[in-house]
Image 1 (tube, rainbow, N blue to C red):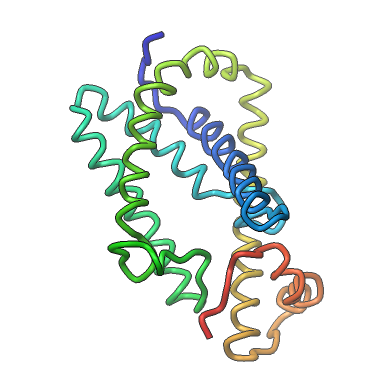
Image 2 (cartoon, rainbow, N blue to C red):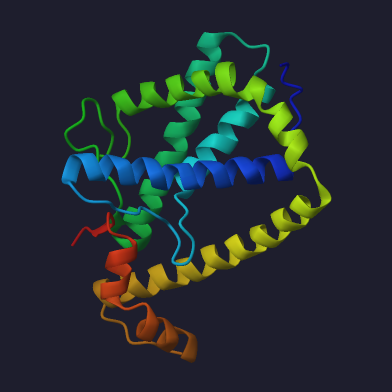
Length: 214
């Protein structure tokens, strides 16, 4: 089936959600086989969303549309570079904004600040090629099914929920970092609420792979 190459909010939303949920499953299965127990790796306090995978899937789709007529080599390089930039920006925000890290490539060959590395760069490029060549051309039928009024309403409503979840999760993470790094006491009722309901123990459980650097 030919990929018509239509980029819309609805399509990017569904891809983001699919990638986010798939990321939770992939990370959970990996931890189960490597460590013997299931871990849910999320970036929000309410929903089970591993958003870097969601961004990756939505981004790969946009790339497959915009670079439809480009060579495989060009696509490979662009997917790898863009994914590296996203991963690096996220890592820098965590390190210098919250004094934290959520992953490390410390023992990987040719890593930069332990946030990106050569083997993952190559992997991102390969994943992008596989998505654009094998999956993207087959998505049109799925998108046609999802392009219904009721599902469009759900798309908007869930987008609002996700944004609220993301904003509140950011506030919880900032308080988590303030408590750990500076011992800062809450300054308003919202921060008091966060400290009561999202204390260090709960935050460690939700963000089980995140670590403070000091």
